Image (cartoon, rainbow, N blue to C red; front, side, top):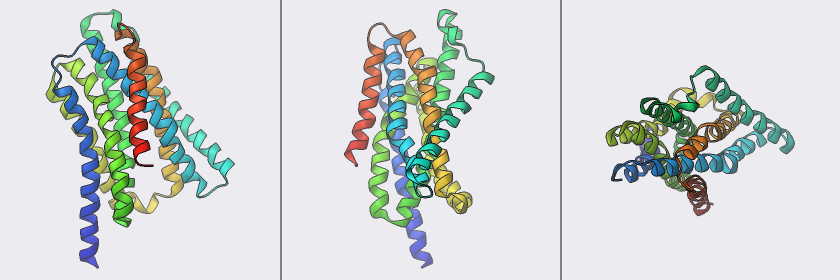
Length: 264
Protein backbone atom coordinates (compact mmCIF):
# COMPACT_ATOMS: atom_id res chain seq x y z
CA UNK A 1 0.00 0.00 0.00
CA UNK A 2 2.83 2.39 0.91
CA UNK A 3 4.61 1.50 -2.34
CA UNK A 4 1.45 2.26 -4.32
CA UNK A 5 1.03 5.57 -2.52
CA UNK A 6 4.66 6.42 -3.23
CA UNK A 7 4.24 5.56 -6.91
CA UNK A 8 1.06 7.66 -7.19
CA UNK A 9 2.79 10.54 -5.41
CA UNK A 10 5.70 10.44 -7.86
CA UNK A 11 3.36 10.26 -10.87
CA UNK A 12 1.22 13.12 -9.59
CA UNK A 13 4.26 15.32 -8.93
CA UNK A 14 5.74 14.49 -12.36
CA UNK A 15 2.47 15.35 -14.11
CA UNK A 16 2.26 18.63 -12.21
CA UNK A 17 5.88 19.54 -13.04
CA UNK A 18 5.37 18.71 -16.74
CA UNK A 19 2.38 21.05 -16.90
CA UNK A 20 4.40 23.77 -15.19
CA UNK A 21 7.31 23.46 -17.63
CA UNK A 22 5.09 24.61 -20.49
CA UNK A 23 5.30 28.10 -18.93
CA UNK A 24 9.02 28.01 -19.74
CA UNK A 25 8.17 26.79 -23.26
CA UNK A 26 6.17 29.98 -23.77
CA UNK A 27 9.17 32.11 -22.82
CA UNK A 28 11.26 30.46 -25.55
CA UNK A 29 9.26 32.33 -28.17
CA UNK A 30 10.61 35.50 -26.60
CA UNK A 31 14.14 34.18 -26.02
CA UNK A 32 14.55 33.34 -29.72
CA UNK A 33 13.24 36.74 -30.87
CA UNK A 34 15.88 38.90 -32.56
CA UNK A 35 15.50 42.19 -30.70
CA UNK A 36 12.94 43.67 -28.31
CA UNK A 37 10.89 46.48 -29.83
CA UNK A 38 8.03 48.69 -28.62
CA UNK A 39 5.44 47.13 -30.93
CA UNK A 40 6.31 43.63 -29.72
CA UNK A 41 6.07 44.89 -26.13
CA UNK A 42 2.66 46.46 -26.83
CA UNK A 43 1.37 43.27 -28.43
CA UNK A 44 2.78 41.10 -25.65
CA UNK A 45 1.37 43.15 -22.80
CA UNK A 46 -2.05 43.27 -24.48
CA UNK A 47 -1.81 39.53 -25.14
CA UNK A 48 -1.18 39.00 -21.43
CA UNK A 49 -4.04 41.32 -20.50
CA UNK A 50 -6.50 39.63 -22.84
CA UNK A 51 -5.47 36.18 -21.64
CA UNK A 52 -5.82 37.20 -17.98
CA UNK A 53 -9.25 38.78 -18.42
CA UNK A 54 -10.59 35.87 -20.45
CA UNK A 55 -9.36 33.06 -18.22
CA UNK A 56 -10.39 34.95 -15.08
CA UNK A 57 -13.97 35.62 -16.18
CA UNK A 58 -14.60 32.47 -18.21
CA UNK A 59 -12.80 29.83 -16.16
CA UNK A 60 -11.38 30.86 -12.77
CA UNK A 61 -14.45 32.75 -11.54
CA UNK A 62 -16.63 29.76 -12.37
CA UNK A 63 -14.29 27.45 -10.50
CA UNK A 64 -14.97 29.62 -7.47
CA UNK A 65 -18.71 29.49 -8.13
CA UNK A 66 -18.78 25.69 -8.56
CA UNK A 67 -16.71 25.21 -5.40
CA UNK A 68 -19.13 27.35 -3.40
CA UNK A 69 -22.02 25.44 -4.99
CA UNK A 70 -20.86 22.29 -3.19
CA UNK A 71 -21.87 23.92 0.09
CA UNK A 72 -24.54 26.47 -0.81
CA UNK A 73 -27.51 26.89 -3.12
CA UNK A 74 -26.72 28.35 -6.58
CA UNK A 75 -27.69 31.93 -5.72
CA UNK A 76 -25.61 32.00 -2.53
CA UNK A 77 -22.69 30.36 -4.33
CA UNK A 78 -22.79 33.05 -7.03
CA UNK A 79 -22.97 35.82 -4.42
CA UNK A 80 -19.99 34.45 -2.50
CA UNK A 81 -17.98 33.97 -5.71
CA UNK A 82 -18.75 37.58 -6.67
CA UNK A 83 -17.70 38.86 -3.25
CA UNK A 84 -14.45 36.86 -3.50
CA UNK A 85 -13.84 38.33 -6.96
CA UNK A 86 -14.15 41.90 -5.71
CA UNK A 87 -12.07 41.05 -2.64
CA UNK A 88 -9.30 40.21 -5.10
CA UNK A 89 -9.86 43.54 -6.87
CA UNK A 90 -9.72 45.35 -3.52
CA UNK A 91 -6.48 43.56 -2.64
CA UNK A 92 -4.85 44.86 -5.83
CA UNK A 93 -6.27 48.34 -5.23
CA UNK A 94 -4.57 48.36 -1.82
CA UNK A 95 -1.31 47.11 -3.34
CA UNK A 96 -1.58 49.84 -5.98
CA UNK A 97 -2.06 52.45 -3.25
CA UNK A 98 1.04 51.42 -1.30
CA UNK A 99 3.40 50.49 -4.16
CA UNK A 100 4.61 53.56 -6.10
CA UNK A 101 2.96 53.45 -9.52
CA UNK A 102 4.84 55.42 -12.21
CA UNK A 103 1.93 55.73 -14.68
CA UNK A 104 3.56 58.79 -16.20
CA UNK A 105 6.94 57.12 -16.67
CA UNK A 106 6.45 56.70 -20.39
CA UNK A 107 6.88 60.41 -20.89
CA UNK A 108 9.85 60.60 -18.53
CA UNK A 109 13.42 59.45 -18.94
CA UNK A 110 14.30 56.10 -20.45
CA UNK A 111 15.41 54.83 -17.04
CA UNK A 112 12.01 55.64 -15.53
CA UNK A 113 10.30 53.95 -18.47
CA UNK A 114 12.38 50.84 -17.95
CA UNK A 115 11.49 50.83 -14.25
CA UNK A 116 7.82 51.10 -15.15
CA UNK A 117 8.05 48.08 -17.47
CA UNK A 118 9.93 46.14 -14.80
CA UNK A 119 7.13 46.88 -12.35
CA UNK A 120 4.44 45.81 -14.81
CA UNK A 121 6.35 42.62 -15.59
CA UNK A 122 6.79 41.90 -11.89
CA UNK A 123 3.07 42.39 -11.20
CA UNK A 124 2.15 40.12 -14.11
CA UNK A 125 4.56 37.46 -12.86
CA UNK A 126 3.19 37.69 -9.30
CA UNK A 127 -0.42 37.42 -10.49
CA UNK A 128 0.32 34.43 -12.72
CA UNK A 129 2.43 32.78 -10.02
CA UNK A 130 -0.41 33.22 -7.51
CA UNK A 131 -2.70 31.61 -10.06
CA UNK A 132 -0.25 28.72 -10.51
CA UNK A 133 -0.11 27.81 -6.80
CA UNK A 134 -3.70 26.50 -6.44
CA UNK A 135 -3.60 25.28 -10.03
CA UNK A 136 -0.60 23.09 -9.21
CA UNK A 137 -2.27 21.79 -6.09
CA UNK A 138 -5.47 20.99 -7.99
CA UNK A 139 -3.54 19.12 -10.69
CA UNK A 140 -1.53 17.20 -8.11
CA UNK A 141 -4.51 16.15 -5.99
CA UNK A 142 -6.57 15.19 -9.03
CA UNK A 143 -3.76 13.00 -10.39
CA UNK A 144 -3.06 11.50 -6.98
CA UNK A 145 -6.70 10.47 -6.71
CA UNK A 146 -7.09 9.38 -10.34
CA UNK A 147 -4.51 9.72 -13.14
CA UNK A 148 -7.35 9.33 -15.65
CA UNK A 149 -8.77 12.64 -14.37
CA UNK A 150 -5.48 14.35 -13.55
CA UNK A 151 -3.61 13.86 -16.83
CA UNK A 152 -6.19 15.59 -19.09
CA UNK A 153 -6.44 18.40 -16.54
CA UNK A 154 -2.66 18.77 -16.56
CA UNK A 155 -2.63 18.81 -20.38
CA UNK A 156 -5.19 21.62 -20.45
CA UNK A 157 -3.19 23.59 -17.88
CA UNK A 158 0.02 22.98 -19.83
CA UNK A 159 -1.48 24.45 -22.99
CA UNK A 160 -2.70 27.63 -21.35
CA UNK A 161 0.60 27.95 -19.44
CA UNK A 162 2.34 28.62 -22.78
CA UNK A 163 0.79 32.08 -23.31
CA UNK A 164 1.34 32.77 -19.61
CA UNK A 165 5.06 32.23 -20.21
CA UNK A 166 4.93 34.71 -23.09
CA UNK A 167 3.07 37.16 -20.83
CA UNK A 168 5.85 37.09 -18.23
CA UNK A 169 8.86 36.96 -20.54
CA UNK A 170 8.06 39.88 -22.88
CA UNK A 171 8.02 42.71 -20.31
CA UNK A 172 11.03 41.26 -18.44
CA UNK A 173 13.01 40.95 -21.69
CA UNK A 174 12.08 44.43 -22.83
CA UNK A 175 12.89 46.04 -19.47
CA UNK A 176 16.22 44.30 -18.90
CA UNK A 177 17.38 43.39 -22.41
CA UNK A 178 18.35 40.02 -20.94
CA UNK A 179 16.99 36.79 -22.36
CA UNK A 180 18.41 34.94 -19.36
CA UNK A 181 16.39 37.07 -16.94
CA UNK A 182 13.25 36.58 -19.04
CA UNK A 183 13.80 32.82 -18.95
CA UNK A 184 14.58 32.89 -15.22
CA UNK A 185 11.39 34.83 -14.47
CA UNK A 186 9.25 32.21 -16.22
CA UNK A 187 11.14 29.39 -14.48
CA UNK A 188 10.33 30.93 -11.08
CA UNK A 189 6.66 31.23 -12.03
CA UNK A 190 6.63 27.65 -13.32
CA UNK A 191 8.07 26.37 -10.04
CA UNK A 192 4.96 27.71 -8.29
CA UNK A 193 2.89 24.78 -9.57
CA UNK A 194 4.94 21.91 -8.07
CA UNK A 195 5.63 24.12 -5.03
CA UNK A 196 1.90 24.63 -4.55
CA UNK A 197 1.39 20.89 -4.88
CA UNK A 198 4.02 20.01 -2.28
CA UNK A 199 3.01 22.72 0.20
CA UNK A 200 -0.64 21.78 -0.11
CA UNK A 201 0.03 18.07 0.29
CA UNK A 202 2.39 18.50 3.23
CA UNK A 203 0.68 21.28 5.17
CA UNK A 204 -2.57 22.59 3.78
CA UNK A 205 -4.48 19.57 2.50
CA UNK A 206 -6.56 19.07 5.70
CA UNK A 207 -7.72 22.69 5.49
CA UNK A 208 -8.37 22.93 1.75
CA UNK A 209 -12.12 22.71 1.85
CA UNK A 210 -14.20 23.63 -1.21
CA UNK A 211 -14.96 27.02 0.37
CA UNK A 212 -11.24 27.83 0.81
CA UNK A 213 -10.52 26.85 -2.78
CA UNK A 214 -13.50 28.94 -3.88
CA UNK A 215 -12.29 32.07 -2.09
CA UNK A 216 -8.76 31.65 -3.47
CA UNK A 217 -9.94 31.20 -7.04
CA UNK A 218 -12.39 34.11 -6.77
CA UNK A 219 -9.74 36.47 -5.43
CA UNK A 220 -7.23 35.42 -8.07
CA UNK A 221 -9.80 36.12 -10.80
CA UNK A 222 -10.49 39.60 -9.44
CA UNK A 223 -6.81 40.41 -8.96
CA UNK A 224 -5.90 39.32 -12.49
CA UNK A 225 -8.70 41.36 -14.09
CA UNK A 226 -7.70 44.46 -12.13
CA UNK A 227 -4.04 44.01 -13.07
CA UNK A 228 -4.91 43.62 -16.76
CA UNK A 229 -7.14 46.71 -16.84
CA UNK A 230 -5.00 48.94 -14.63
CA UNK A 231 -1.48 48.03 -15.74
CA UNK A 232 -1.10 45.75 -18.75
CA UNK A 233 -3.56 47.23 -21.25
CA UNK A 234 -2.83 50.93 -20.53
CA UNK A 235 0.91 50.27 -20.81
CA UNK A 236 0.40 48.32 -24.02
CA UNK A 237 -1.52 51.27 -25.46
CA UNK A 238 1.30 53.67 -24.65
CA UNK A 239 3.78 51.62 -26.68
CA UNK A 240 1.44 50.89 -29.60
CA UNK A 241 2.02 52.42 -33.02
CA UNK A 242 -1.20 51.07 -34.52
CA UNK A 243 -3.65 48.36 -33.50
CA UNK A 244 -1.19 46.17 -31.59
CA UNK A 245 -3.13 46.54 -28.35
CA UNK A 246 -6.48 45.28 -29.60
CA UNK A 247 -4.86 42.58 -31.77
CA UNK A 248 -2.76 41.39 -28.83
CA UNK A 249 -5.74 41.38 -26.48
CA UNK A 250 -7.89 39.38 -28.90
CA UNK A 251 -5.04 36.94 -29.63
CA UNK A 252 -4.50 36.44 -25.88
CA UNK A 253 -8.19 35.70 -25.42
CA UNK A 254 -8.20 33.36 -28.41
CA UNK A 255 -5.15 31.44 -27.16
CA UNK A 256 -6.72 30.84 -23.75
CA UNK A 257 -10.10 30.04 -25.33
CA UNK A 258 -8.49 27.45 -27.60
CA UNK A 259 -6.70 25.80 -24.70
CA UNK A 260 -9.95 25.55 -22.73
CA UNK A 261 -12.09 24.37 -25.65
CA UNK A 262 -9.67 21.58 -26.54
CA UNK A 263 -10.14 19.91 -23.17
CA UNK A 264 -13.81 20.52 -22.43
